[in-house]
Image 1 (cartoon, rainbow, N blue to C red):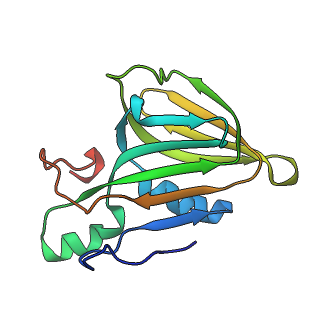
Image 2: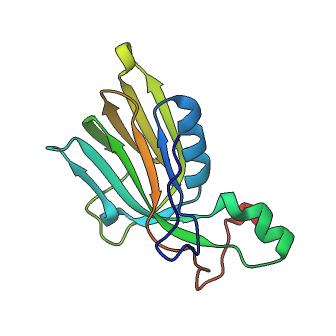
Length: 159
């Protein structure tokens, strides 16, 4: 797992993680739990064999500090990229539905032969996307500064 340098002005440390094994993937899965995004923000580039999602995630890594300092909880936009994707299958998710908002519940990996396997993205409402991959290669990178959501909402289980 790798972390990157600060934003250009040094104000915040953007998160940048790479998962090449199931332990690393568990960290990314925990940090993206309750992330939300429009279905239109998912894309699969067959030529590059890359599946990507621009998502709005709760900053779980900042939760203890926010509670201790009694400051508002933050969100950040991040890109989740799964590389070496051979095939994409969806169940209960219409990727072309521009009005559909998805809430990511979990990311799992089912190992196959020789490092290949299946990355499974599970969403609230019983939807899932299965990505057949040549090897486990998942990256998460923050692309905006943290911000307080206008609704000031937090994941329901934190209320």
